[in-house]
Every structure is written in structure tokens, then in C-alpha cells.
Image (cartoon, rainbow, N blue to C red):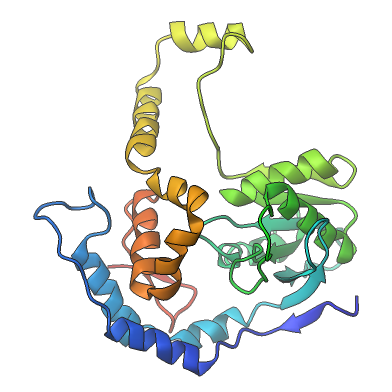
Length: 302
């Protein structure tokens, strides 16, 4: 298609300089003694990462690494919205003589197309099949994709856009992979375009898990309430209760008052760092990693 254009990431130097200046001018709050992670990202962690961002992180090295993967932009029209320029990675299978499966890899929050980069070689070049053509978009209003100007661009609209993207790339049939928000979008793609176009979905995210209701499935309700839970089940239920009691506030703020939260996240690199790093810590097993731009494929544990 004529309007599918190759794309290279090239952040203007003045933007990088401005971030460095904001990092230099950052003022930090104090914190209560022995609060650890209970009240949010610890001050020592934010100061440590801010220092690394200022003195150790090399964006140009990271940018060069990201540009090694083929990227493109194209404009997609979604019903009820203006045409939106969409950024995506597109890597075709490199194994000759095989019929590759078109796969759209949809990231979530807080994430990006970077989540697909280590997997793409395994899916397109591996020694054992199946083999895939991989499309990994930046969600609308994420990274290098354009943002809509009006309210209402929901998961169903995202599904419409990525379905149209796959058709535009020549894939009338495809499968999806989604994590977090990407899993919800994948579900809508299956509901709206399967099984004619969307043939299968893979999720690495479960959303809104709740006990079965007696009115909808009395057998499962009896099984859930009368059968003793295993120790593993109890541990998982305890973790779920902790999340809704202690770790869900970010979602309510972003969902109900995104404009208000957005001022701090847009203007303050330190504020954005603390906001996202807390989730990396809370949602990962022993998260203590830093991206090393001189070796962009590596994560080092301190």
C-alpha cells in the first residue's frame, strides 16, 4: 500500500536535553521511616534511577537498537473518528518454503512494542515451527502512534483499527497475542471478527476474575463454595484481595480522572518514573533490573 511508510525512531535532541534539564531540576518529597514499598516507590529507588537516567542512560544507543527492527506507519480510519497514523513493527517469516501464520502482538499498559522484540526471532526464525509473520503495533496514543482527539476510543475501536491494519497488510486471516489491555483488545477482535478473520487468540492476562454466581452457574458456585481450597488457591486469593485493596488505586485514577493525572505524568519525568516503576516492582517476581543501552538485549540484575 502506498501509505505504508518505513519509520525510523529519531527523537529531536532538544527533547532529550529538556528531559535532562527536568531531571536536574527535580525536587523530591521526604518519606516516612521504614515505609519500604508500602506507601509507593521508595525515595532511595527514585533517586537512584534518576541519577542513572541523567548520567548512565544513553538514549541514542537504545534508539539505534530499536531501529534494527523494521518499523512502519500507516493511516487507518476508524468509524466515528478521524484517520489515525499508526506505528507498528512488521517482521515476516525468514524460513523459506513454509506457510507463516500472521500474528498481531498487542501490548498493554505500562508497555510498548518492545515487549515483542525478544520473541520475534523465535517466532520468525526458530528451528522448530510453527512460524509466524509478526505485526507488533504501538497502541493508539502510545509511543509513536497518533492519539484520537475525541472521547470514546475504547477497546472495541482498538479492535477495529488493528483488524483493518491486518487487512491492509494483506492478512485476511490472522491470530492474536495480547497482554493486559492487549488481551482485552484481542478478545474484542475475536468477538467482532472471528472466526472469519480472527482465527485464534492467546492471552497472557486474566481480567476481572471473580467467584461464579449461583444464578449463572449453580454447579460452579457449589464447587467453589463447598470444595476446600488448596494452599495454592488460598495464596492466590490472598494476592488478589491484596491487589484490590492496596494496588488498584492507579487504575481508578487513570480511568476516572486521566486528565488530572496526566499533567504530572506528562510534565515530570521523575513522576512518570516513580508511577511506572512501582508497577514493575509490584507486578514482577523480584524486580530489580535496569536496561543497559550499551547492551540493549540484556537486562542486568544489580
